[in-house]
Structures are given as C-alpha cells and as structure tokens.
Length: 170
Image (cartoon, rainbow, N blue to C red; front, side, top):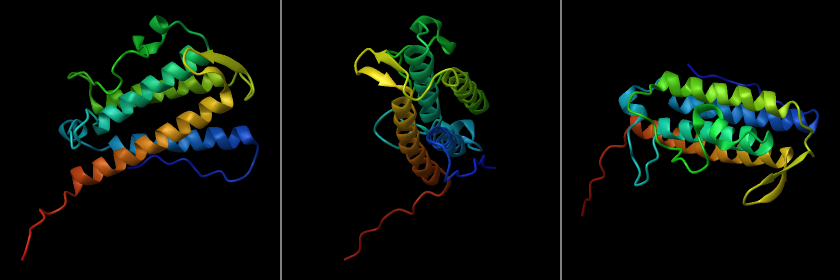
C-alpha cells in the first residue's frame, strides 16, 4: 500500500512548496513501506545507503533544518538527540521499519508545526551557509527528499525484482 499526497498545481507559493515537500516525504516512505526488515537493511551499493537508512537520514534532516536551524533548538535537545555530526544513515539493529517510518512521520509533523510560525522570508543563520530563509529550507529538503526517494525506488526495485545475471556471448 502506498501513501499518496494529491498533486497541487495552483495556489499560493507556500501551499505549493509545502505540498511538494509532503509529496516527497510520502515517496520516501513508500520506498520503504512493505519491505521486510532484512530487505530494508540490504546494501546494494558501495556506500552505507539502504532503504531504511534513507528514511533515517531524512528524519535527521528534518530535525536539523526545522528544529535546530529554523527554531533554534540546541542540537542536544532536538528530538531523537540527533546532531548534524551523527551518521544519519545509521539504523540501530533493534529499530524496525515501522519504528523508523513513525520516527520520520513525527519529525515531519514537528517540522510542519515549527514552520507554521514562520513566513517564507523569515531568516535564520545556518552555521555553514549563513543566512537562509524558510523558502530555501523548503526547496532544499524538497530537492533532497526527491533525490533520496529516487534512490529508494531504485533500491526497492533491485530488492523486489533483481535483474537476471548478464551472460556474455560470442
């Protein structure tokens, strides 16, 4: 079963930005939902990237950008105690797919609540990038989550429908 957000194609800029981010959040969840614990942790690339790791990374990004950068919550007080220096693709052995999905959904919900108190042009200071506004945060995470949802789709396809071995003929 996939979770779907309707595509909004007209309206105010904020509505379009929020809708796009929510659609990409849903696609990240869809890439993981329904995978077994073993499948979700399967590494098919040289990096530590796994389907469940992509979702864990996105939850960390939500906390960093909305809680820490936008709302000014100290790193040590962000939900989950995650800081920008934590390896965000790491999933503990005792964490389950439903738990990581729920973690991401909680982080996303908290991000929506925080963002509701800001205008698109409200600025804050990122430690490396300098001044950023909410519009930039929405665009950055929509881009990041879309890219990772694509990664997740490819990993899921490789897990669920592996390609037959390639044979060389002369």
